[in-house]
Amino acid sequence: MLDLDRILFPTDFSETARHALPYAAYLAARHDAALTILHVQSPGGEEDADPDDELDICQETASRQFEVDLGDLEGSRIEREVRSGTSVDEVVVEEAAAQGTDLVVMGTARRHGLASLFPQSTAVQVVRRAPCPVVTLLSDAEVDPAPLRRILVPTDFSDPADQALGYARDLAARDGATIIPVHVIEELTVPLVYDVDVAELDTDDVRRRARSSLQEVSEAEHVRVVSGHPGRRIVEVAEEEEADLIVIATHGRTGLPRVLLGSVAETVIRQANCPVLTVRSDLHAEETAGSEETRA
Image (tube, rainbow, N blue to C red; front, side, top):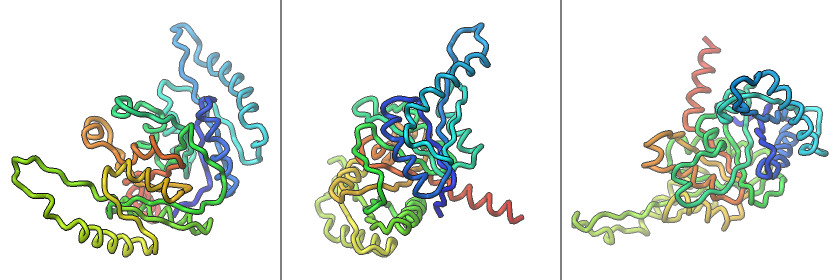
């Protein structure tokens, strides 16, 4: 269940962050949630500098910037926080855990080419490690904060994908939105030396089976079954369906396995023109364990 009582919005006061702030404020108002706007100050680098003095100066500067960025978004449940740390994503994750945050909302920049193989963006790092779902918005995406109408939910029929579908259902129920499940059939290619005729595979039968399974697990009338690269095709289907939101599970891979195997969720985050809500695959297990400890 996606109950939103506390939303965390990290900002570096950039145009990317300013672009995403109205959406975070809208979600907070829509769900009657407290919105914490967090700015993380990195050390100045001078060895003899007093960390407390640096933080005081940062707080004064941030206070003035908060006034500019918030504008008429100021509300009784909007809180401002300034923290210090060498790693912005670590501070954001720690703050989210300390506050019992239900959702993190962040702006992020579009990434292409070689840079996308080794993403260092704070948003991607937070998505991998946050103790709650994360919504990301690209800096050049046209987003109009409003009740959701169409939610795209990619699925590979795994447990994490089922969990993401559950989150989507919660959001859809509140806004009266339509859920559109999508499954991407990856194109099968094998070296010629294997002497396997891939063309003999009945792709129409595969699509029928996938569509039947998708309708069964989602209970949705309108489903999409497409072929190709999962990340890119999900983004394309979201455009075709005019989705207001994509809800997708991520396995939270880090290090070399993530580079070798890639991440469908990260591709979607970097290319989708609508907000993307990512749900880490292990969040449900952590929530379940916490509930069992509380009952014990």
